[in-house]
Amino acid sequence: MQWGLLSVFSTLGSLVAFGINFNASNLQVPMSVYIVFVLLMASAFFVAAFSIVPPAQVRRRDGTPLAHYPHEGLWEELKRQRLLLKDWRLLAMFIPMFASEVPIIVLSSLNSLYFNIRTRSLNSLMFNGMQIVGAIWIGLMLDWKIASRRTRGVVTVTAVAVVVIAGWIGLTVWLYRNPMDLLDPPLFDWTDGPFGGFFVLNLIFGMNMVIYQVTVQWIISSFTNDPEHLARLAGLVKGVLAGGVAAAFGTEAAGLTQLHVVAYNFTIQAVGLVLMAVMAGTCVTTTSCTTEESVSPPAEVQANVGKDMEKDDQAS
Image 1 (tube, one colour):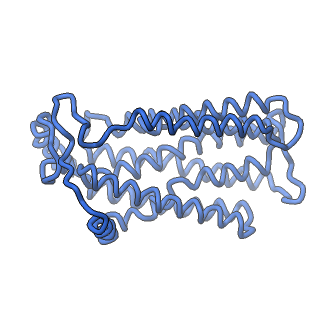
Image 2 (tube, rainbow, N blue to C red; image 1 turned 60 degrees about the vertical axis):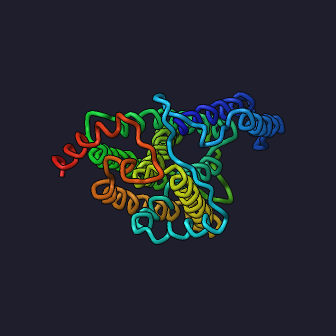
Image 3 (cartoon, rainbow, N blue to C red; image 1 turned 30 degrees about the vertical axis):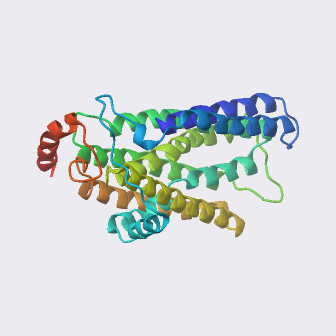
């Protein structure tokens, strides 16, 4: 849901940029694009101010609270943050977290180096649009109730691996066929031959951007049902993810060829897929809400826990 909404509004923003740049003849982004994006981003403050409620007031449909929220001071919170680094499951998921968002760096760089301004805008629009498709698809797979939670995780990681590996191999082939001189970039238009192959790859990597990251978050969130612990995990995921993005930018800044940049990012995502498969098959459980004191489990979960555990045992 969160990624779907994010992708919808990212696509709308890209559509605005595409409309403005459709007949652009130079490489300068119009000031109107920046103004529109600043206004859209500023509007988020007003939405948050009137929409966010205290966690303790959140209720399920049956009226039960999600959890108990005892007050904890800053020092206690810092200690709990430190304990995250002692959880071997999170250490095992470090590379998947690190590699979650690298596609956007690689595709953005190639988009700016190979294409003119209006074609870049089209590629950006389609990249964001495919994130909507990816968010819907990955959500359906991970919420597929016909299978146990662990089985869903393993099947989803396998499907994600097919999309991710196909994209990186295809991009490597495209770069071999379209070498580039950084001092004289080609600036292709969408009417030029090389655009077709990149357009397809752009769609695949738009999917990659969502399905890889959401699967990582899904596996990690399966470790607990405690909202406060999940909030700490969310912060850890975003922090490590930001480090991966910074490293991806670093490969560009270091002057590596685009093929070497692709090789680095392909490698860390491939290693991440292996770790995700292992963790999905061994550490994902039906639920932990019946074993965590701070969590208030809904009645339907308590009734279904036994059934899902039987499915997991059969799958094992």
